[in-house]
Image (cartoon, rainbow, N blue to C red; front, side, top):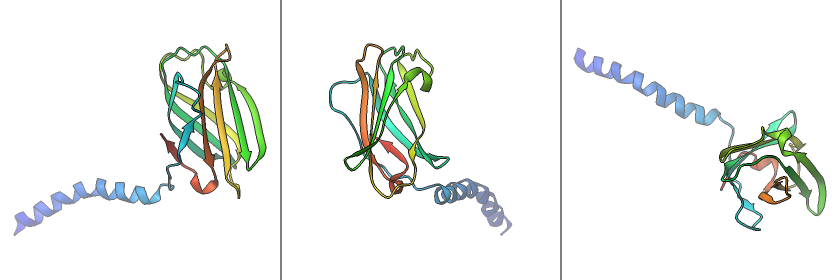
Amino acid sequence: MWHIFECQAMAIPHVYPMFLLILSLFCLPTLLAIPFQDCGWGDYPIKVTGVEVFEEQNKASLNITGSTNKLITGGFVLLGVNIGNKKIIDDIYELSELITCPVSPGPIVLPLHKLFPYSTEEKMRVSISVNDPDHEEIMCLYFYYDTSSTGVVFA
């Protein structure tokens, strides 16, 4: 009888990690997959695999993840945000202000912080384009965003 109790008692520590994992899933914010599209103009050197949208001081911030097959020495980022037919943001950022250049071929994360109001009543269309110093487009994507769809966006 004591052997059965000892076996059950020894099995309990193995349950704790699983219990904590399941509990943490309920405590994490809800993440919904939001489709994003490349702009379809060509085969871009930067292949985007995901877009994370999160709140930062009541503003929406983005992390774009992917990989590049090209050495990126600099350039600029074009950001456009529309609500319906009204453009609310049309900004240009130096790429070197967002990431350390040059970027060797391989993984890349492009952070864009505190861009536009985080909480909105209407759906926004967000478009992001990256051009190299010669004005060649090396990445272009767009997606639709609203507060209820905040989370991680994967291709």
